[in-house]
Length: 124
Image 1 (cartoon, rainbow, N blue to C red):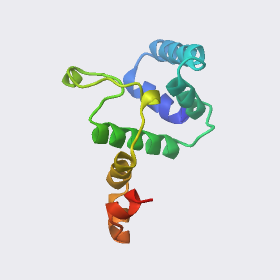
Image 2 (image 1 turned 180 degrees about the horizontal axis):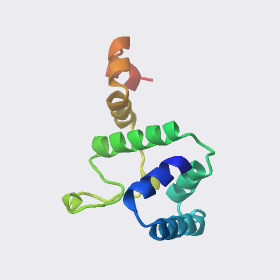
Image 3 (image 1 turned 90 degrees about the vertical axis):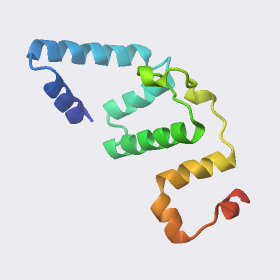
């Protein structure tokens, strides 16, 4: 994860002083907020390499599929999201049907190859 962030900041900042200042600012911010915000604590786990980058990618994929399924955006980050609900992800309750939709979106090929009907899973 650290190598990825270093590459990202290398691409974003050509000035080494600016790069280092922004890295310090980001790390300070993560350190300050990690005990207050669960998403920051999770991100900190990736920074400290408690989890691998592939797990982060998987988490972000599931988050994206959840936003699509529930038609929400956890945090608005651009003007195209104005008017859509902004939801705290820690307050979401998923019904079985929605959980199945998320899994189906994420693992569509695998689910289709198993020939499992949604009614079978919903009856569990």
